[in-house]
Image (cartoon, rainbow, N blue to C red; front, side, top):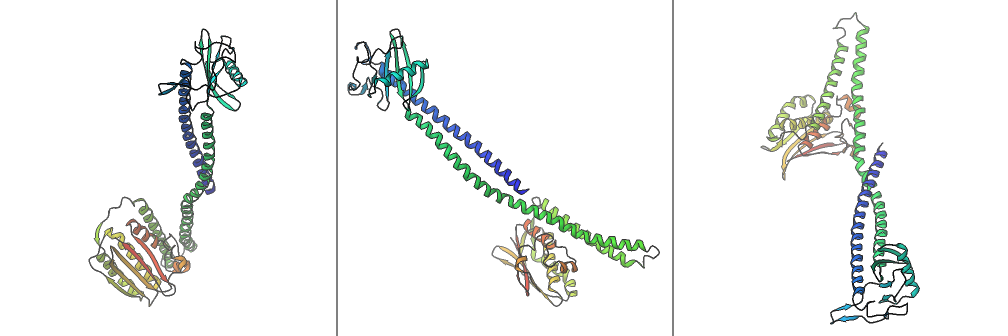
Length: 429
């Protein structure tokens, strides 16, 4: 399922990026194409204007065949030292051919560059074959554009070499192709990397959800089995009185209470997740709140034969929910008493450190193995399943505590020396 999700992400990402790149490249190419064509048009107009000026193929020359007219190597005429007259722009390769009405060449082609007569004849043939007032063709590997100016006595055809401009557009296409392919290759691997990273939290959440459902089902299955078994015992002995069957009824009541506690905790966790953004927090005296919890639990601690040592710095205040923080303290103290065992010791410290209020709850005992420290706040997680079940827990207390502390934008974590002690820390601001 997640592999398909990753592949879909890759396909959508590659398709979207390819379309964006294609549109961007097309826009850049069109803009450059319009600019190049505009430059070619301006160059052609300048060339035509130069050839139409006096001194080129006008009345000062005799009409004739290919040997008549001016020399191709003739120096350009100067207009008082300012501009060149009678020549096309120096950067252009161009020539002009004059023909009669039947497209027969009447004068020697005029050009600043020496070309053979066969080339001029082939160029004229290409232009005549096009049959248009202007056009473009390729000759001897070069690209040419031409323009025909008709007159009563004949025609004037002006040719301009645009090979360099065409190469700019061609190179632009090649560049876009290479860049596009490289970008797609890079994008594929980067998208694959980020797709895996993006899917990983979803996969972890999905796996946790599956584990949560399996654990919740297991937790509910045991008391339901006990209730069902004891009910069958009651039904199998209808002649006995309620007093005689009170043992089975107590078992049913105990497991029912356990189920009620489990469902209540699950509902609480769900409500915490849903209302995290809407909770209203206010300043309260956490020193007083912790002292009240200790007073409430003194009888339980004494009954368990556990020593309690505490040090509470007075008048410490934090922003949050007093009842929820009390619940966290209750959970941590309850766990510390359970896992310290008879004759053990529990220590509670509450003090100001820098800009935070730190609560530390320690207990002697077996401690927590390093591999469990990062997972003890997961729902239904137990380091020792059999022992936890005997003590009546179902692995939601620390998950609830973490949810509350996260809601208060604090930190909760544990440190342990296996075989000696475990300490839970809560940081609040």
